[in-house]
View 1 (cartoon, rainbow, N blue to C red):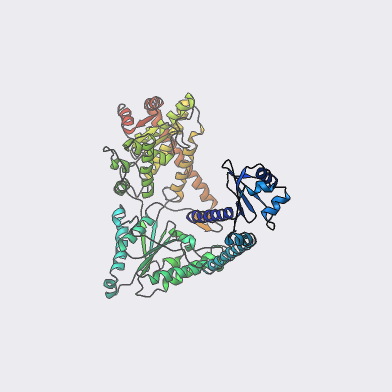
View 2 (cartoon, rainbow, N blue to C red):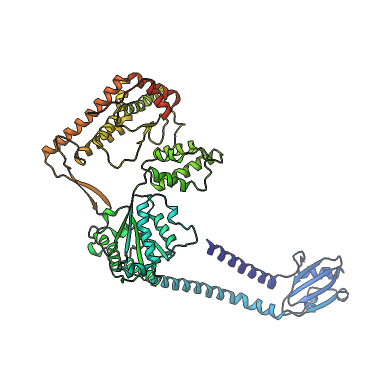
Length: 613
């Protein structure tokens, strides 16, 4: 856009001066002067209306007695007096007119001759020059096609350090060693330590891989080159390998330096899995990366960093010692890390003094760093939309539900019957969860539609969990059927609102048996080999490694688990039907129950938790 504006400006200037030149050369008379024919000129002279006549070439300028001017033209070869005589001018009247002849400008004369003939030629020359210039540019681009589009990180702009990265303590410690080596390589080389040639950042999307790489760039104060792996691969054979060579040559010249390749799985997938075999362009690019990384000299201060969320599909040659020596795993943040991340992303935002980030951290299990940043941004947008200058706690809590489930659809019109069914459905989930000892605490129950959900029940763990027990899984199964049983016992019928619950419960029951080995009859064994096929895209398939008889037993045990969970939910709701009715009626009235309101209803019935056996 900048070049387009510049070109438009110069084109306007050139056209303006051409117009001005032609106006100077060919304009005759004054813009306000009257144009006369030679007959009219003779008539005015004979009538004594002409005071002065000025002749310049073929142009005739007349100053009339009344003070106005007029102009006319004559033949260039004849004199004015002869022309006037031919038109019958009165000689006595002509003698009373002041007569003056001006020499025509030589520049004007020659320009009037040359420009009409030369201008088309000049325009053609300019057009051909522009065409050849474009062709030359294309040739130059062809010769630089194998050059990599490498970007140097600007240290002074948006500088990020390890202080700006919350959590990830162990990951930062690993990368601090890399920074220390780049700053003081002699300390490591003297003791015989080998330079780490590659650092692979592995973690789920949004956990901060790119942010950590930027922090390394900010801490190391060395040239930091970054590129996306997808920029290596083109439709032309050999371009990717050429760009890899250019990348490493540039990095070696700037050593000590860091090269960061984002989403390396774009070229680092396992070889031999696509079309074309070893001649695949992506595989040729990967081969060149392997050669360049293994070809570093011992004292070459260049470290390659790469990021991926699919480390399981990378080629094993990339992961062997000598290439990516160090692997840094970025976990999902725990409750303390989430609180620290929220503090960082709350900088520059006008938070209410009553905002409790600890509470927000408790309500956001499973949120990555990028999710938390998006959460606070959504809260700021919500506050601005309501013309408020300060972000409140309610803005953030509402944004959690928006991020998880979608925006609230309060304008959605539902019948009183559907509202009642939804209220009993969500009350069933909440009641079963509140009645089971291994269940997570209920934080909110609502029948306000969000996204595709007609209502929702939010239950969150008290503490972070890395492992889950069989009892906890069975509790989740029973909770899944709470809405189904509540509808069946209350209305003697079921609706499609339970379809998602049934699908999730069936999937969980199947995983308990086939993956987790949590079944007494079939024992601690996994069933089915799951593998990923990389052929024309991604496809996950499961190989059947058991007999038909075992398959029938698996189906039977899945049904047993589902029926057991269904019976648990049924017993709870049958015994505590009055509690269900109270929760449902309160939901119909208020539409939303927060944690305090919900447990106030539960405590009034003096319920005791049940343990699934």
